[in-house]
Length: 267
Figure 1 (cartoon, one colour):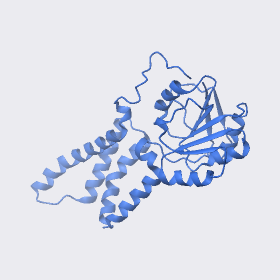
Figure 2 (figure 1 turned 90 degrees about the vertical axis):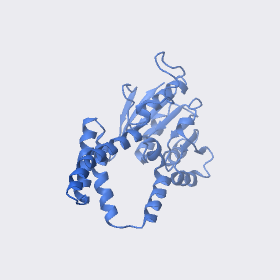
Figure 3 (figure 1 turned 135 degrees about the vertical axis):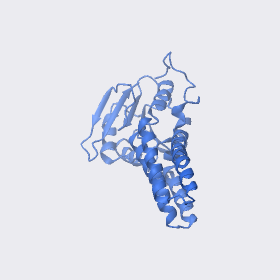
Figure 4 (figure 1 turned 90 degrees about the horizontal axis):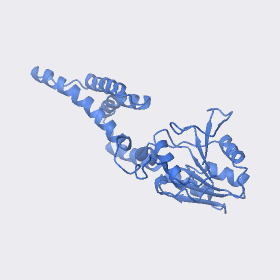
């Protein structure tokens, strides 16, 4: 798709909007719950000269956060996070764990799940059934140039390298640990190009097939990018997550354990 619809703004992805600030929204929601509970609890216990009861306060904050998240129609996973956050913080604080362990856990999380922390794109791994389906779906693209956005551990590229030796395969990954694992797994495969990079700064114009297994959150933004950059006749395939409001050209249902669906969009 080389042209942008008349009613779309090419710079919409970079302009400030509520959709582009999901983490700040969730932080504000949690802070509102904390403020609501403490503004009532502090005067009550202060007048009685009593300390705030930790467990009850944490549970109250979790309950209020869940209520606000429900009223604002947050996705179910955010509701669960808001409900459990304050109680878990209190419980962990009560264990008196050395802060160094939390720093280590954060570093390890960042190394593996950088996409989830920065762009709501967790690490999803494509299985062998998906790779086989991709090889069949792209059989009518001889010598294809294939791009895997958020390529994880390189599972798709390794599999396609065996079944599609005619293809030029590229994977983009920006989580350090998974990038390194993918680099080692694809090293020595002559027609595989393993890259460190941001999917939003990667041009899609040179590829015949683009594959992504991301999450619902980035799909509208990604679709705008696809419309601007992909050429007519090219193919975009999304694992499990459809583009909101856009009918797929074809939907492939796999007979694997998680009942994977591949949403195909012909450009």
